[in-house]
Structure formats: structure tokens, C-alpha cells
Image (cartoon, rainbow, N blue to C red; front, side, top):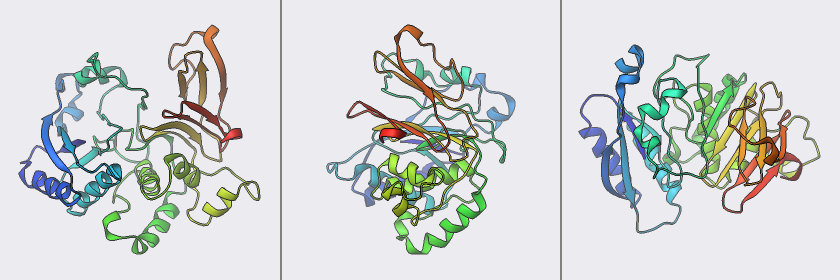
Length: 308
């Protein structure tokens, strides 16, 4: 788990977190101050730099472990104590910073450690347009990274607020007050993915294609469960088991992808995002309105809209 807190004493907030872990039969092993290099930050970022911690936990019961971690975070959020949980998962970890992307591995020495290996990465250099940048609003969020904006955000939030009373207390708060449009979409996708849906299903429900009509029984059913979150929006997403990208049904943000002979999949808003040998690329393309690609890290499958 990664946790941001203000410079004030951690004792009360730490005690609240430990209580939340205990309620879910999760044992706290250690607190680790995350190594950082604050000298590379600009004036504004340095003046608002929070304490950044890793919290290491375990459990004798692995059943629904990630969902129980999710409920820990919700309990802490209900306490209204200062602090922001950047990620709390057994399979993903989120690093945030208010700095240029090229400085990111300098700010977090962890990322330059040869022992730090991963099968995937979601990266976004976020410049906020509808809210002021802050450490907690830096992207990626907990399940997704969002290029664009949600133009239906007022209606989407109002409908989620209307549903809130039908949801159990342990899932509250449903939406963060004062969060960005990306934050709200991330929280809705996470809510769905932690309550019976896969992450890919949650993304498809929230960001459906246009005019699905009678083409898909899944979309017919889920269309009555949740309303579309319309962009312009290009989204990358992962839960550590699936990683993918999707465009909203307006298709007004670019997303190109390529797959090479080694099974490396690269997708992004700009061509040349990652150096790839063109002679080794097996398949490439771009997403159109409402289309999605998905790489399953467990089954090693690559899926596109036409065969999802």
C-alpha cells in the first residue's frame, strides 16, 4: 500500500489504518518511508510535498484479499482524517509526483533499482484542465489513467449520488468530494470491479460504444445498470491481471497500439511512445470510437473489440 499524508503527526491516522486492517483480518507488518529526492521538485511541488509511506501487510486468509483491502481504504476514508491512499492492492502499486515525467525515476530511486520488475506499466503525464494539480490528483489513479475529460460529469455524479443509499455502508464514500472527473470515473470503475465484475467488464459498462442496440446482450443488460461516462476520453487501465486501453464512444482522443514478436504490447496517445523495431511488429492499429484492447497477463491473450 502507498499512503500520502501531511507533515503533521501520523499517530492518529496510523492508528485508524491499523484498526481498519484489523477489522478485515489483515496484519500490518511494517511502515516504510518511501525513498525520494525532493531536490528535483519545483517550488510549488516542494512546498506541498507530503509524507509518502509504504505499508506492508499480510493475511492468513487469501480469500477476496484485494476486496478486503478496498474495504480498508473505504473505512479510512469514512474517518475523514487527512491522508490519501494512492494504492492498496496485492498486485499493483501507484507512484505519483508533481514533476515532469523525465524526472520521475529520479524522484523515486525505487524505480531505478534493477530488482524492481513488472510485467506492465501504466504511465501518464497529467496536466489538469478542470482542477488545480495536486499530489493526490496526479495520475494514474488506482485503476486507470485518463487523457481527456468527462463532459457528462455532473449527471454521472448525480446518478451515483442517487444510488448511494442503496449501497452498503462499507462501500461508502462512493465518490470523493472535490475529486476530479478522472477520480470519479476511477472510483466508479473500481466499485464495479470490486463487486462482481472484472475490470474489463467494469470499463466496458462505464464507457460503452455508441448504438450498441441489439448487438450485445451484455451491453443491453448493463446499459440499465450504469449510464455512459462520455468524453472525449482515452483510458488506460489495469488491476495487475488485465491491462488495456479504451476510447469513449465519441472517439475524440488518439490511441495507437502495436504488438511485437516477443508479445510486447505498447499503447499510447502518441506514435513513438516506446522504441520498437518495425521489423518485429506483428500487428498495429489505432482505436476507434468505443473500441477497446485488452492484454490478459494470466492467460497471455491479446483481445480487440472485434473478438472481445
